[in-house]
Length: 249
Image (tube, rainbow, N blue to C red; front, side, top):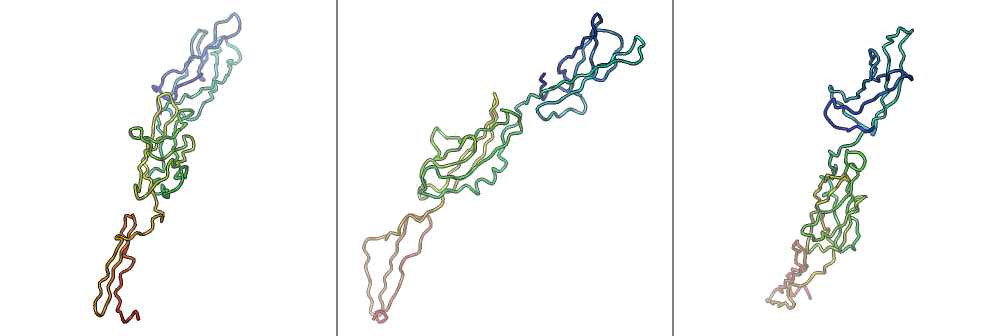
């Protein structure tokens, strides 16, 4: 027998009927309730009304006892027992949750110029439901069908790169990572992660001009050279020196 995990408090689960000895009317089974007289009745197992039950686990085992009223005046009432196993059908009412979502952006860093398949981060989501309702698959949302440059393992949650990044072109990416349960009507949890592209020293300095002029004065020689690379932060001049001709002798 299966019972819904959630439903109206006091709603019936199923009827139970037992049959007495041959040539006698059926005996009624109820939960530890003594019956009066012989009759064809039905014992109903219900969820209690107060306090409302909070069913947990895959199943419950109920010990059912049926006792006659000893109306014939025997030495003692007769009874019989049986076990009823109640299976709990899970309702998909919990969506997957990324418990560490607020920390992922602090650890999501990939070095530029690395080959595709470079590891970035592993994410994990939890779903409080049971069975397929609690099984989670991971994915990455793509805007307008354009690849984000990242891939996620749908079962393990490992995020890896699919391209080689250049920090001078783009220094960060925002990913919308999804966790979807496997219910017939699935629920989805979403986590926004910012991935930083770390800098690698892959650009040599370049002079701003290909030709420089030197101005000579009687007592000093002044020459200023500057070079820069395609970095976002300005670099100081490589040479800024004023020398006296006498000092160079």
